[in-house]
Image (cartoon, helix red, strand yellow):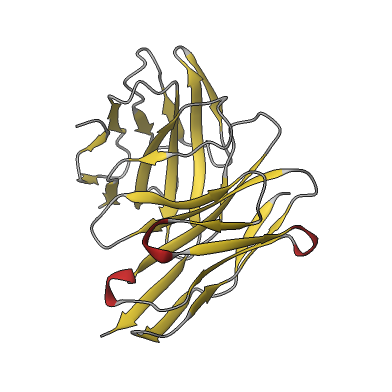
Length: 114
Length: 114
């Protein structure tokens, strides 16, 4: 089955710790995205990557970092600098340059800071 | 700044009632428009999209949306809802500038009473 996998489903973090959320896709998509979903605020873009070894900041990149060393993988690190990290994180991918971009989403990771 | 407004955060309907969810966006140029849906426990997925041509777009499960350029609107409709339509619905806009940024609305939670 082609799709996007995110792990873990739930993640608990102590204050001051960095944590890394995994996102893997086997859709052969060039573009990948990380969103944060908070109640009543919809999805807000954290980072996106159009191609391997390239990524751009989204609207709320502060306190987050990413890497894109492989086409299939786009891990997100939530650093201790992120002041309010408790949220639901969604990874997505798309094929850029072919009309309106439909994004394909993973199941999400819920991060809770203790 | 570009934004997407969804008028209702929560909607409760009885089965067979008609549905209309409002969506307005602020961007003066050409846009690609989407409605995504997140059923309980499932991935966010595409419901329908518009990029050109007939402003009345039909999607899956009997949903349709009408693009009214003069009103900057892309409202979602369904003539008769079912209990299985209970979900959260997100309107999204991608300015057709070749960029990768899609802006999402805050979402509307629909609950259909059986």
